[in-house]
Length: 143
Image (cartoon, rainbow, N blue to C red; front, side, top):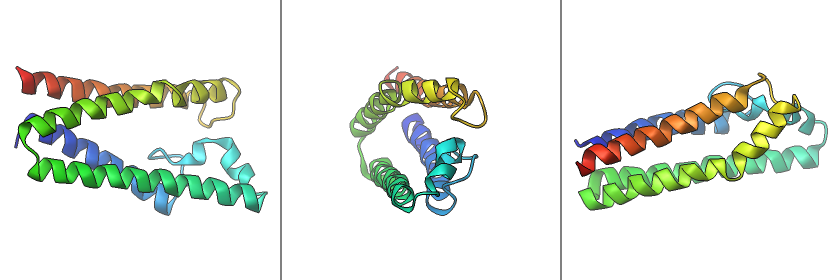
């Protein structure tokens, strides 16, 4: 097993925990459940809005599941070159968090729309950890 496969397996494990949380306990405030958003509870007051929120949460979970399944295939059947490119693409796709999601999360945190306060910083560090971990694994694999 090479460093790229190990990095992808760690990512898969962490994402599977998040997928499980999103499918079975989306309102949780742990495991990146959406309960950290104060509006999640408010959405329950309006069935139409809550149904949309639930749909989007399950859509995210399903999309994550697709990526995880593809990573499993890449780990077990992909060449080293395929694995190198997969990790590079993971870095780029995870970086997209900083383009759209983080600015919104940071603004919501500043307006006390997230509980616990400061969660945007925690999420920022977690995403930075993923990117750094993949970058280190990619560098080791290339050297």
